[in-house]
Image (cartoon, rainbow, N blue to C red):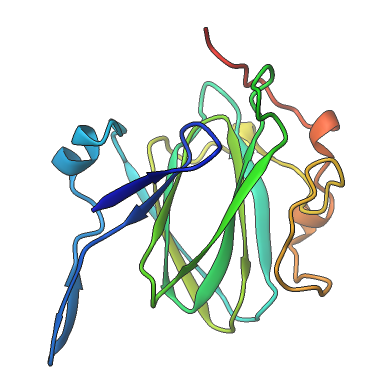
Length: 186
């Protein structure tokens, strides 16, 4: 596996090795020892799987507040998404900045989104499946969001249409108004 750091401290792109032949392919998507050797020491305790039927579906920008914050290891197993992490750690030199990458069934890349970051994705195709590991259980009382089109964050979503949104995401606040207790440590 190849671990590629981004401009956002802790957000990492993971490129697995693909072994293919005339039958198809094989890849290892997670190996605790390899991840620990790369400095990723999360104990993932829950796997999530989502399906989005329509191109242009947008899920996010989501996070859970401390003490139930989650690190996510995200991959797309059917179709293609534009995956985004936003630094929401107050006091961070990259506060409000975002990183985006295409994750697809073809490229098999993954994105590690640490605690202190909001996460979201837009589907680039119909019939998309996304799977991700988290290191903390879902906590409805700590579940929060930020609007997908916050002008101060200014994510450059790749599809210029009104996205398909949940009611929760339609009503999400701006970052400056969000209930967020993340601060840079040290």
